[in-house]
Image (cartoon, rainbow, N blue to C red; front, top):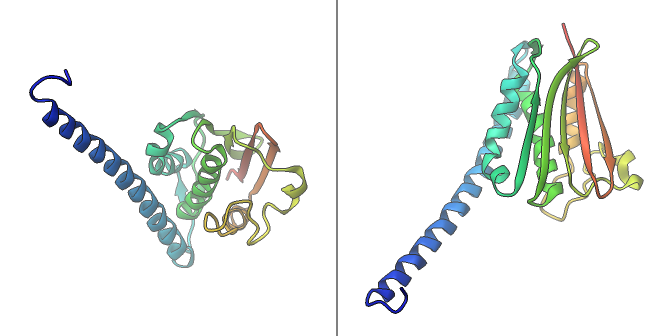
Length: 198
């Protein structure tokens, strides 16, 4: 085929197609980043204005957050969703979405582009429990006690502010809930958020 009379045009078309695919991936990645920033800014702005809690569908909230990462998940990440029917709770959904965003983002970064992201929702013993698990590098035992400290981060310079988990913890506690994690270096981490049912 490459020895045919139109081989130059064919190669040029292939080159343009490859460039277009690369540009599309770059644009998609940029859109994801901008969307997350806008999402976070909206959540931050509403923390001071949304005084009353509202009936909140946590399954819908999780779907919203996962949609932000769908392109990244498609590129080497297996998504496992274990969503059980649970009652709605009174909450500040934008704030909770910031929690789920932080947990999913951290999980994806920990896996470096390949692995399994597990997101579950269930009700147990008077609580709704959301868990976000990854098969990434895990959190070293010697720093696990500091993981919720403000400005503490294990990420490279410019990749994290060290405020994500601290902010998540504050939001969960504002909702009278608890955030916990288990982690095994080299095997992965699971963060669990328990929120009281009415």
